[in-house]
Length: 320
Image 1 (cartoon, rainbow, N blue to C red):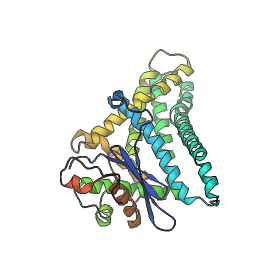
Image 2 (cartoon, helix red, strand yellow):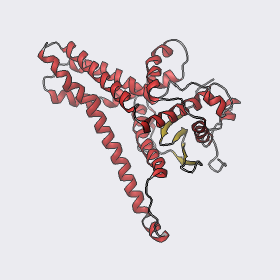
Image 3 (tube, helix red, strand yellow):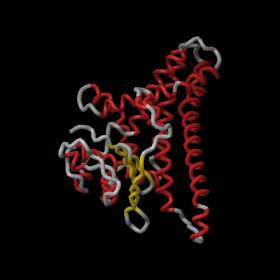
Image 4 (tube, rainbow, N blue to C red):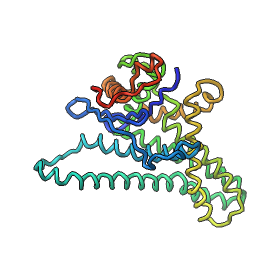
């Protein structure tokens, strides 16, 4: 069965699913009902031909995923605010635009802070920690190897620590439901709770696999940077930051290639990412599978897909 081209992300008590130019957010509300919201997908970069160029499309996809993912997380969290003040309808209407601007600022601010922290934690910190090797040997290869080991260890330790958090464990259960739902469709099965639950919770196009390959590609590229005749530390760090788009672009192209190939080299190279997903996914409950199904059906016609039809989009006015 060919790729469905569905992508998704787990959010608080729910799932975001994207297909083509639309995405949906399915959330299990505190009263037990499932709320599904469908919106048009709009890239933060607008619409340009260069956005589909190899390598560049990976950078575009990565940034868009951060923005839309943060937006969806904020939306799902809004159902679980501890206190919600009752306001006059007229006052609420007057403040609506102001509130939207504030939410937009918070969203982009969160994305910016996340990027800065990620660069600091996974790119700059390993470089400085690995400086300790310089006290033992002047070898550039030894330094590059130490930096690689530190980077991978920090990444794995980070995933291990957050996977032990109770709230994150539920998000990881929804993450598992997202993968199972997509795998169910791509296995050619009818989309129902029973078939979803028996599907695999691992998927080649997962963001976890993408991040692992970002780590691996960065190790290779940073090894090359270390061997360059650059003496100043700040220049070494600057080069690492400037080459992040290239690293993201290469990693994205690999994930897309692996996701559309089931045999041979792609399956072998995908195994580390699939193994790592055991940390970032959990077996979901049946009610979580229901949310995933609702989110998929809001943007993807799985019946048309199973029938081999080309058009698998769902009309925006269709009943959910």
